[in-house]
Amino acid sequence: MSHRIFSARRILTMNPSQPEATHIAVRDGRILGVGSLETLSDLGDFELDERFADKVILPGFVEGHSHALEGVLWEYPYAGFFPRQDPDGHTWPGLTDIASLQHHLGEQVAKLDAETPLIAWGFDPIYFPDRRLDRNDLDAVDAERPIVVIHANLHMMTVNSAMLRASGLESQADIEGVVTFEDGRPNGELREMAAMFAIFDSLDLDLFDRGSEEATLERYARIGQRHGVTTLTDLYNPLSEAGVESMQRTCNRDDVPMRLAPAMSALTYTPEDGIERVLGCRDKSSDKLHFGLVKLMTDGSIQGYTARLMWPGYHDGSPNGMWNAEPERLTEIVQRYHQAGLQLHIHTNGDEAVELMLDAIESALELWPRADHRHTLQHCQIISHAQLKRAARLGVCLNMFANHLYYWGDIHRSRTLGFERCQRLEPLASADRLGIPIAAHCDAPVTPLAPLFTAWCAVARQTASGEVLGPNEALSVERALRLITLDAAYTLKLDDRVGSLEVGKLADMAVLDEDPREVPLARLASIGVAATVVGGRVFDNG
Image (tube, rainbow, N blue to C red; front, side):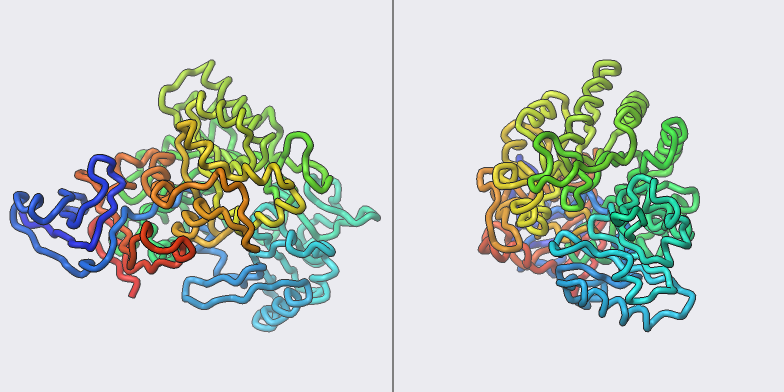
């Protein structure tokens, strides 16, 4: 039986037994062999494919924490502080003050008919220190049409008066997360899931469920393809019946260049119903679609002041953040899903959330010992060295949000965390020294989907202003590349299939113009991605 052999200037395999090669043989979507052309010559008849002869091949990048919302939100106008490129290659400018935001929203309103609400996304109030955006600012854009501005962290939004009235929140200021003026009236800012879902319900819009729609998934796959990503996650998916069918229909197509691992949002269901739902979906898995992950949301975000921090709390004296469910309920959910043999991906931004979840995992393991649970704490912006040692002892994986260093490092240094805690922001090197399985992620659409940028963050640890935070927590480029390939695959329990280039694994590759180890560090994030290969099928980025 004939097979194809791709040649390259260099292949970085992530296989410690054979770290480099020049040729890779592919048959039936899997890797038949890796080595030199001479060592592969005894595999039988082959077709030599030299289109990547001057390129550098890595395993297809694995994004261990992102959201298919990245494919949804580009249907709405972007309103973020940093410039950002959309799936069509158009760059939207950054909006650096409230007046420019209002002007931008006014331009978008002019494109809508009178009945259509305006939804925008990506706004980041932390960069507007003089005052918070409120309902009056949005009323000045349009007082009659509902307006929703979703914040960059996806944990908050600001809405106008028409939206507050339509959702019933105008008279429900006592709901947790509804922020008020001094006179007790809602000021338009809504924090965390309960308050935000009141808005989505009144708009009859479930953005997270829309992440499973065919057009969304195709767009999400294309964005990943542009950046060398072959395995994506959707780490907050309701797993609705229609959504599951759509994911099966779309992801299993050969022309959709991604494998997808959706994680069911645990807080959407009772533990009984959630466990039944995940287990029921596992039988629907395929090479391109991996069910079985569960996502648990605990606290909010540090830059949104909704993360839960241990003493002394926020550096600037702001009150502590919010839980998305009562700590007792969060603990029970961990225990129930653990007992059912499922793997949890747990959102923990603040160290108080980390502590609660380590307690929960420890008690679950005492009651129901499991050798290879791979429960993964996600983000872990602030985690102490004592907590790192506990995580190591409990067999917990840590997938850290390295991009935070660039996008919010300056804010954390000056306002939310201060100097000392910022030296251990995303402490990847310390975790690695302790032997903890680690990965790094972008949390798209919170920050752009671009694994080479994530790797750069883990190495350079530079903020947007150029300050280096925590040089002792920096990794080498070689180590950082594992975070976005084999290590990320490990946290998804997919490392037996993807993440490295070796015999028997799926033939997924990122084809780069240059070797990431050889370019100056400043250029690591901008290395060109010529193509991705998914199951042996080439998708050119030309």
